[in-house]
Length: 73
Image: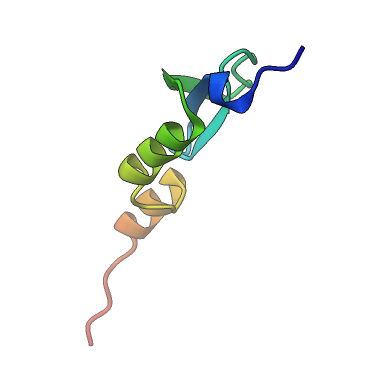
């Protein structure tokens, strides 16, 4: 029998590009992702992501933009 959504725990995961996602806590962590935290409700998991994921750009793009010379003017 499937769990009722209110009973479902969720896992917040992050990949090497510092991009976040959630998944049911009962599922295996996908290859290339690591667990950040298991949370009881989907809303709380999404709220956590909204709080910590303030820059949606992939990490590699952020690094590339830091290395790019700044233009004057």
